[in-house]
Length: 406
Image (cartoon, rainbow, N blue to C red; front, side, top):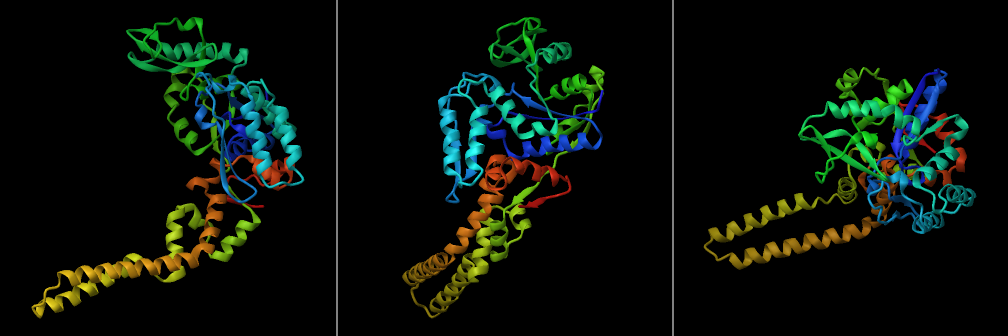
């Protein structure tokens, strides 16, 4: 059997955040390098709908937007949630409000072909992933597959048996379409509400501490392509691997890059900002620093200096035996007023530069988060080559790179 290179991620609308694409391309890249098989685990069992029910993007007017799929999931695991008219409307809104290019209509049609009305989100996500990555020979894996469920049940049952009393077990049971937490109490198994259950009669699902175990045992994984958080927690699983006598796969970090559009590069140069400024500071910090540089006016420093000057002047009057209470109040009031008027005038002159800084942050650090954690791949596909944009990312895949200029 060829070496299996795996990565995985919970489902996400339009393929999920950019880092999901980077993980998948990392698996494809390494599989090609060692003549192995790339496998993408689409986590259909995850139930945190609020993490995946929105699309964040920049519209055709350059504004940062959020579209939210607001529905009652009935507590279902995300893979079982049905595509409904609200989601179809949301997807149409996304494609009608982004910058219209020669690729927009084709991308929209392909997406709507994947997200068919009534289809469950797991199948829709798998269909879309096939359109994005199928040509690379990627295997798409859904952990709800019967063979895997049967295989992993023994591992999970053993993990339940060794679980600590009066604590949550490292697995879930599937009750119809809901993923339910299992607890061990008085050496019995029960649900969160205290109801006792016989776990042997349920489908069992891994949690964060047992997913990699089941995955590595089932696929005999050579290497797992992981994000920073995964790298950290996988290091802590050695005890579990030893207990279950499973060989732990190698772990390789995924690529993590910021995509730099030409207009953003021009704005950075025009303003005099560099990418390190954006990476290490938030919007308010950069705005404040640039305002001071623009005007030479530091409100805090000026206020302190003028306050000291007023105090010196008042002291001179007091030393001459004069009453200064009203004068002190008046001088401090007028000083504050003059500083405010000066600051207001500077801000008006600074508006154009502030707008450009907002544009830069909206593109590179939206909501003060890494770009790769907010935007999806379709925003960039629409601007830079349609489905061929995946090839651009693949051909530039390098875990040492921090930026990719488009």
